[in-house]
Length: 199
Image 1 (cartoon, helix red, strand yellow):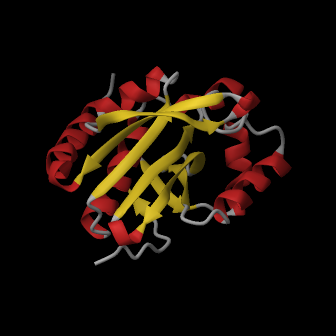
Image 2 (cartoon, rainbow, N blue to C red):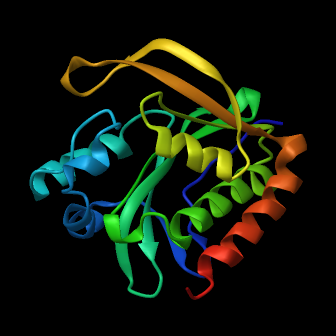
């Protein structure tokens, strides 16, 4: 059996993941202009709405990618983006990546629930046996966040990508495999309950 991935809306209590469209450009531009938030992504922040629309067009036209807008349910606003990428149907494997959030939504239940929705769909609906993540070795916050959700660190791919300012990036890989998913799912639900609780 191989993956059959189709555009889908994934809905939770605090966040909804919608297939990315040009209609999301204003919301994403409003929240994607902080340079520091994009420091470890392949490109820098949005400079204007035309730039945002161009980024959306690229995301929609990249083979093996299925991008989502991350929508704050309470406010009805697009607050960031994420995607399935490096989709390998013959191996029942994919990557969750290109994830970014506006500053107000970082370190909140939004990211935790987005990961729960994406992983649940990948394992429970698509029948994945592996979901992977990668991040810049310099991005210690991302590495801590991936370890927090229960992903296992696998190793480093050296000189893996040329990113902003022609920097030669080493990438750290993490993954969750099917045998680990039930435990990771329970862990994510517990984290989400804690993240969503009033301070």
